[in-house]
Amino acid sequence: MPQGTPVKHKKKTKSILKNIRQSAHRAVSNRINRTRVRSAIRKIRTALSAGDAAAAAKLVGPTFSEVDRAIRKHVLSENTANRYKSRLTLALNALRAEKKS
Image (cartoon, rainbow, N blue to C red; front, side, top):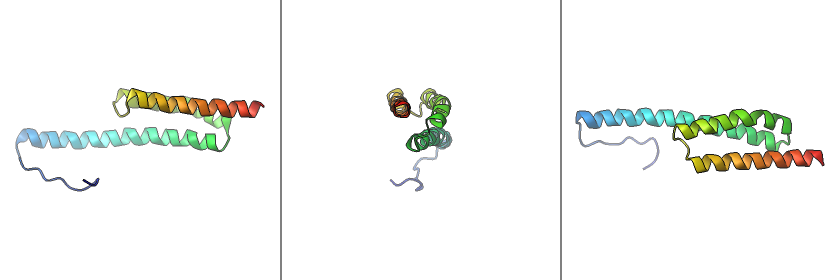
């Protein structure tokens, strides 16, 4: 089903209506958290692709903090988050090594 299409609910019991409200609320907060993480990763990737090691190094701490927060809030799985952090660290270290030589 495409995103954003309305869903029909057959039953109208109180518990089902409450569950619908909870699902909508969780979806909004998950989207906010996921967007925050993706924006942080996008910023650091932009700095890395521009070859700006100093700016990327400055963004590492806040980005990793957002990724760890996403783990705690169950927005990202731990393996996925660790993979992101590992790849960003490898890219930053490669950029630093390139600048030294």
